[in-house]
Length: 89
Image (cartoon, rainbow, N blue to C red; front, side, top):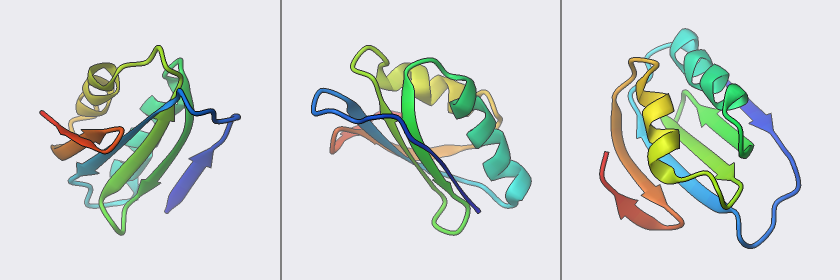
C-alpha cells in the first residue's frame, strides 16, 4: 500500500528516507498517519513492500523530528538518510 501526499516542492526542501520494519498494512498505516499530522511535511510515500518511507519536508522540519515521530509508532527504524547522507537512527 502506498500513500502519497503532495504540496509544491522546491530546491530547499529536505528529502528524508527511512528503512522501517513493517509487517502489515496496519504498520504502514500507522507511519502514514503520523506523517499526515506532522507540520512541515510536503509529501510522503510509505511502502510496505519495500519497507521504506520517503518524506519531503519544508526546510524548517529537521530529520530528527521526523525520525522521532516515526519511532513513536513503535516501528523499528533500521536506517535513515537526510538529503542523500546516511544518518543515525
